[in-house]
Structures are given as structure tokens and as C-alpha cells.
Length: 422
Image (cartoon, rainbow, N blue to C red; front, side):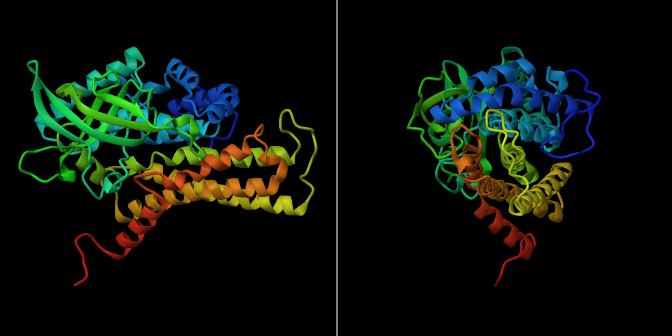
């Protein structure tokens, strides 16, 4: 990407020291977001359709391969670089940022995060060979990966084995897996080229166990894979998160995104891997604040240039919004700077606090924005009512809903590992 000496805007994450790559990624995200994603956002929301045009732009700009390591042809962006870029995209189209997360995680989990997970030599060799296949699809073919997680059970929260199963099989002389089950809220359904499925290995004579979780890519064209269900939600409508059903779907061994047993270790080792939904909502919070300032200054494009900034009640509300937004940016920025394998207890609790603060704070800022801008802001030709609806969805996102975060924080604060009450 082009080297950018300095940015002429303040990123959604705030003023931070940036690398050359981070400046280039943020510059690209800003250009795409302002010029293309924001003008298109109403149509994806209105029709509940996937933002395919946005993905053509992301593919052309190299964003789909941003977290693929350089030696595989990618941009080599690290965790923090992705989180900054995602927040900037979320500032202009929440559905695009949220769905991009599913694709990028498929590269980040198998790339930089996997490099920090303990594997034996055989597992490491297997992983390097297989991720070369998956990365080549993205770099050379522009392939889009999804990451269906939810099943309507405790599995997505890490409290039970996944109901979707994978059984070892050999078909036509090819070793692989037969997958059966169902995923709900499957973002990018119908748009992805590959679905990275989390499923439980079906081992004869053994009860399902979360430690036997497999992470396997299922090609969208696989016989036995079906998409079903309506999609008419309150917000994040452009994600098109319909149901996926797997009926005796066979995939070769090479479709594994991680070797056997490695995903479970990843989930225990890298808690920040589940923080990657948050930047979308930090972006939305920025967008709600930006709109409020423009509206009160009479600078919203297409609207009468009527100023409302002279009223003390409006000034106080904007101040409250800015204070909350600055707090969110600060804890978010610290959390992404600290993200690493096996974080300390304080780092882990701070990560939880950052997630909760962003997910609940985004909706709170959108709420304040609507109250401050008044009745006109509810009109659908303006973005604020969409931002409000999109912002409410963050606290509901598995595996870290707002309720689960509070539960984790309280329990892990009061109990050390292995402690229990008699």
C-alpha cells in the first residue's frame, strides 16, 4: 500500500502513534468509507442485502488480505492494525465492518494468533502447509471466508461442545471429514466462498468434548450445504445472517483451518481473539457523535443550514457524548496494545471491561445523539436512526454478550484459577 506521511483526520480510535502500514490502512478505510460505504449504507439497511459492492472495493484495495502474512502475499497487518482499520470502516458502514471481521478473523486466527499457540512439530508443519492453501485462495482469487459460530446453545459462549459434528471419513480414497449440524446467525450466508465452521469431532465411544473442537473450511458449493430462513432484523441488516445446515457434507483434510485440538488451546491462550467485534461499534459511536456535531453546526449535507449549537442543553449533551467517547477510545486502545497470548489477570479483566464499555457505550452515545438532535434525526434519510439500531446489536453478540462479560468479570475477579467454595 502507499506510504502516507500523516493523516488529515482523527481516526475512530483517536490520536495514536501509528506505523506506516497503519496510516495507509486507515487512509484507505477513510477514503472508501466516506466516498463509497456511507452513501451505500442506506440501501443495504433498507433491503437487508449483503454489501457486495463494498467487498469489491475492499478486495481491490487489498483489505481482504490485510492480515495474511507478507510471506504468503498479504499485507502482514497485526492485531492492533486490524482493530484500528475495522473501527474506521465501522464509522461509515457497520454491516460492512462487522462482516469483514468474520473474514479477517479467518486469516488472523490462522496467522498471527496461531503463531503464539503451542503446537508440536507435526502440528506446526501441518498448519503451515494448510494455511498456505487458504491464504493463496484469498491472495490470488480474492476468496471471501465466513465464520459461523452460533447454534442457539451455550457452545458459542465456550460452555459446551458445538452441536455441529465432524466425523473422520475416507471417500473416494480421500481422507477428510463428514460434517452434520446447523449454524444460526451465520453472517455472509450466501456471499462467502468458504464457511469456517467450528464443530466437535465425533469420536466413537466418547462423549462430545469442547477440547475436541475442529475449525474447518466448508466450500460454499459443497453438496449437502444449505442456506435457509428469513432475514429481517432490527439492525445490522446488511450482514444477511441466515441459517446454514450441513447434511453429510464431506470436505478433505486440507480444509482444516487449524490442526486437531489447536482451536481449544487458542481460545484459552488468546482471549483477545473474541474482542474483534468491538471495533465495529466503536466506529458506530464515532459516527453518531460526528453526525451530532455536524447537525448542531448546521453542516449536514442536503439539510437546511440551521444552527442549533447556541443552546446550553445541546452543548452539555455534546460534552457528555465526547467524554464517554474518549473513555471508550482510551480503554479500547489500551486493550489492543496489550493483546497477546496468555495475558495477565489485570490485562484480561481490562479486556473484558473494554468490550463491555464499547458495546454498551455505542448505544448510549447513539441514544444521546437522537435525544440531542431531536425529532428530525429519526427520519430515515438521515443516518442516525440506523446507527441507533445497529448500535443496539453489539451487546447481544456471542461469544461475549454484555451479560456474559459481567459474569466473567465478577467470577474471575473473586476467584483465582482452581478456587471453589466448599
